[in-house]
Image (cartoon, rainbow over all chains, first blue to last red):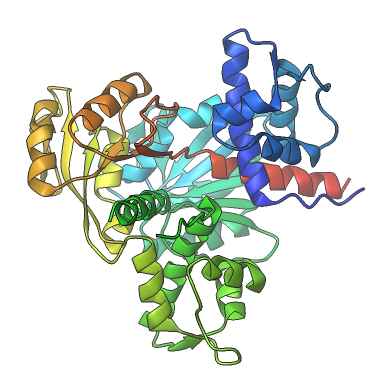
Length: 213
Length: 213
């Protein structure tokens, strides 16, 4: 098989393009140009064409892309032509917010198990899910074929939770705890730092202030 | 003044470098090479040098960078050499999680006002903050010189909240509602979609499965 070397920034944009295409499709739009996609998501048309070119030939010169085809293809590339069951550890405020976040469901993700080691949280319900003790995790992972785990614990617990997940078959981790995890190379891990985008705002505000001086 | 044209990906990495430098500094490390920064955050050494070059000359060939100087400089570039007061609208689960998120404080951000239009939420406390009705927002923005607002409302309320914020002097918005806001060009806005990083995981898991076929 040909080895793809797709930059992570391209995958991120693909995720954004696919949302835009879904919106066009819902609105009954059937055809779109790279320029229209570019305008819709705030990048250059050349960037759109370059990103899509990693995955083959799309569209017809002068005609553009078929919205439904390109939407389905981007979803397939992202692995979203199927349903993903997830588990989450940490039934605090952030865990609660993530369990009730509608954006996950819209993309085919379902959190099917929530775990905590806090006895005051175990047994409580978040929507239809009961917060379970950690020792119930191995069976649930097997039963539902779970490959992805979300960590929404306090910082001090995150590494131990990640190790436990991996020992029980989790292959990819989305980590909301603000520290880098120390994990085997074959595990896919991404950290979500909620303040990075705030810092893009402060950078831009600072730059604007400097320009008006 | 010379116009900087700094790619957003560079600003994002600068934010990540600055965290890594803070960690080194806390651990008493005084000097670091671009290779060590690259290893620490998972990019190439050439990328580190290219990103820093947007902002001038740093480091000495063969000696590397002074950790404290580079840390302070990156923070200054990001606008984090000062304290930022923020307001937040939407006192639901996500709003609660954001108000208690320690990662904001660590970077100099304080949420000093939380607003909602739900009478069952107004008057409740999130840590030391009382949830206020929307009409209290204009005075608080003026009193605390707030320039940045966070939207953590349901999707249907987000545009109206953004318009109200801007009318009252907010210059930059961090939007957690999963829809693009329609705002004047001079407003800085960034959307946080919590599922984008999940899709990087599913992309990579899909690619690994394909490789072993």
